[in-house]
Image (cartoon, rainbow, N blue to C red; front, top):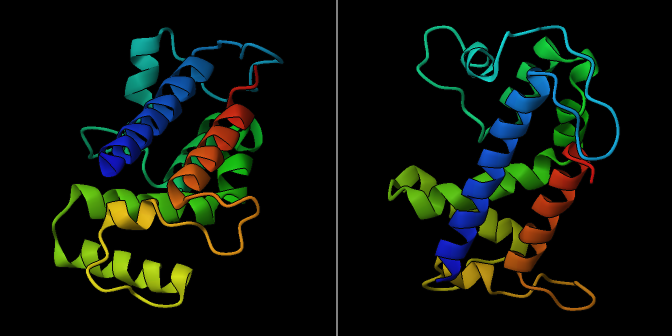
Length: 166
């Protein structure tokens, strides 16, 4: 259940990035504040969605924050609001992606990256550590105590609120 909750949060994060990017590219204002200064002016949202897909690909990836930042810099002045926010939270977003990949992929490389990540966070790899087990583990030195699941949910929400101020 914990892994499913995390995966659903990650999917919501991807959707937020994609939809907010396309809406901003189409000239939409955020709930509070001004719309980003655009370099591109697609005639409608459908075209905006097509313009963000890299040449030679069938879709745009939203899981890699550096790719989204680079895309934002092509379409918005200083890549705002995406590039500065994503870059300042890149380490956490990379960690979130490692966890997501460990849940979604059964490959040995995804598992190895996850195990290395757990060793970094906990200092050791507990025997039989699962992704769900890691997510319900308390973040060392957190005060008040919070689980990694809560920690990452809070970071994603914080980042989302900086992209879409309300």
